[in-house]
Length: 378
Ligand SMILES: Cc1ncc(COP(=O)(O)O)c(C=O)c1O
Image (tube, rainbow, N blue to C red; front, side):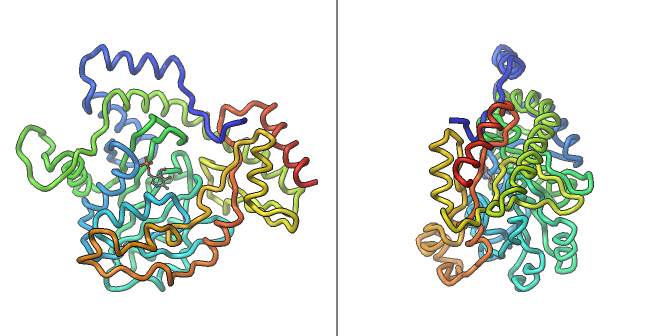
């Protein structure tokens, strides 16, 4: 089976981990500070802080933004459930706005219609590595005085007009889960240009301690820190990023050319100026002969690691259908998510599937994948 993801772990990562282990200083410290500096330079923001994973990056940021129970945060339903869950974790209400059928990202034209007096923030998700329309979203946020938190957990290396995903909003979050473009097993990062917000994040992620550390505490916080062992892997992975993203984009272009011959396969579309980091390559299937689950099964049968990751968009997940079971429901009026209809995300949910696009694919792997499509679709 050609795997859908394959982390690159070289001697550099192994040696970096050993150096930290031998230093005896393995919790969050100097190596993490170096990783943050290098990562913020890569993204193009003033500040960055490491977190234990992408989910805690999101919840830490929402808390630092002072999002309160009952506040509404607008986001995409077509995402990994952590985007929505992080909003629910702080007691806020995820308000799902539908996506565009070409980008699978939140449709900016629909955002204004979802804004109420309880709306505090917009959380666009750069899905599969393709940045959402940040110019349009920032304009809406500015005109309604809303905060913007980019969920860039899949989009390390994505760009709009040469500016990196993660450099547009009031803050952005990244995940370094094992399958991500930059991976440390588990891990996360928040980027921001806002010093006040940054200072609050540092406290939220570290039991309300001030920058000076020690045992004076100034607000309720958590332990959402990252170990230096993990940051050491991150620094080595960051060095691989420019080349890895180039390779992903090259493979995606090859696939786009290949699928232009098939009427039944429509790739996710980059608008002019947008560059996906291709965390996933996930086209839509429009076939009269087989459905999406059948193509996934057929591809797997041919040894191609294929999946349909968001067959159920967030509003269709039991978590939200049974939101009354969540502890905040005693205090917060949640909408009836079973009455929410978001036809584009539901349709993309039914039609998308992903195929391997990671930089470890060989030319033979790619030929094998293309041949599998000929076998299945011709
Ligand atoms: C869009 C999105 N948001 C948030 C997360 C959460 O990140 P993590 O798994 O590191 O907690 C992920 C990770 O899978 C993700 O893909």
